Length: 148
Image: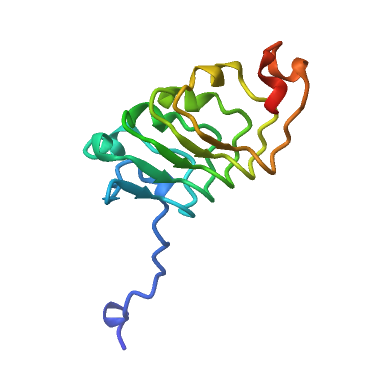
């Protein structure tokens, strides 16, 4: 067989979501499921066309260190961001007016920020299996520590 007729046997690597900032986000019944996609970020461009229709998201089992994409989801009520690399929960403040159920379990969160008292619609916050420090010093002097 001549060299020119040899089939191309090079392996094509599988697509990687976090290296493709233009990969479209799909919404099914107002829900986004990006669980286990090895993501470390979701861009505004990815969410642009669907942002208004997203009411819930499963972003679990990824590599998120922050949840900055929440600022692009003005109507989100339910978020599962368990099993990520979160150290702080500050980025959920972007959705403080809408979030009712948040699962941030199995991360590396060490403290609970004081802004949680402003999240008047929040009904469920799962912080289990994190590295929470308990006590007023852990919460920057916040009196909210009675539920830590």
